[in-house]
Every structure is written in C-alpha cells, then in structure tokens.
Image (tube, rainbow, N blue to C red; front, top):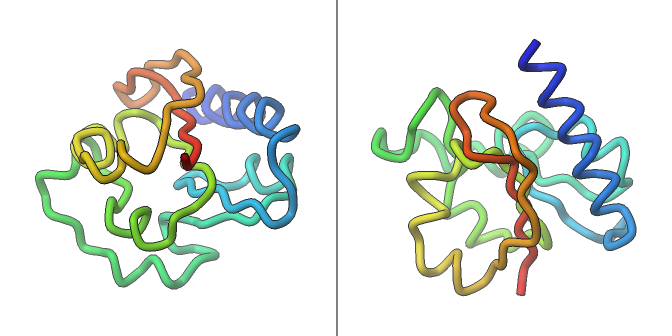
Length: 127
C-alpha cells in the first residue's frame, strides 16, 4: 500500500510543479516515474536507472543512510538540477544538513507523508 500512496504523492507533486517546468527543466528524484511522465521535464534519476552519470556517486558514506537509500549530495551540487524532489528520509543526513545545498536551494513545498519513516515529500527549487 505504501507504494501506491507514494505514487499518488508524486502525481500530486507533478501536478503542482507542471506550471513551473518545461522540457528544459531538470528535476532530480530517486522515484522518477510520475514526475517524468506527468511533467514532461528532464529527469535526473538519482538512482542511475536512466541517468548513468549518477553511478559514480556511489557508494555513499554509511552515515548518509537512514533507510536503504540516500540521495547523493555531491550529485546535486555537481549537476545543479532546477528542482529536487525527495522524501525527507532520503535526504535527512545529507542534503538537509549541508550548508552548500541550503545556499543553492529553497524549500518550495512539503506534502505530508510518513512513508518509510519520512517527515514529508519535499520539493526544493534552485535559487
């Protein structure tokens, strides 16, 4: 059931972002399906399935993980996507604690969810 709820949240994010993105916009996310399909934006797949350049950012320091996945901070800093979308739990010990990320991205919105022990599905826009 969690997967269906998460997918519905990503559809909501895509609906919310669609007026602000176009085919040149880059959205970084680990869960990419609904975002790419519903927005038409370019996707930076932080897991590497459709963005092979991300593979060189793994493995991560074990301290970055709260659960079995964490978004690579250096990937975001290097690639500078226009948007970063992630459950809070994927970025809790990395992006959220890093001053460089905070200097370049602003929190745009958070959709409430506790999926995977998260404190919301967060959307950040590059400043």
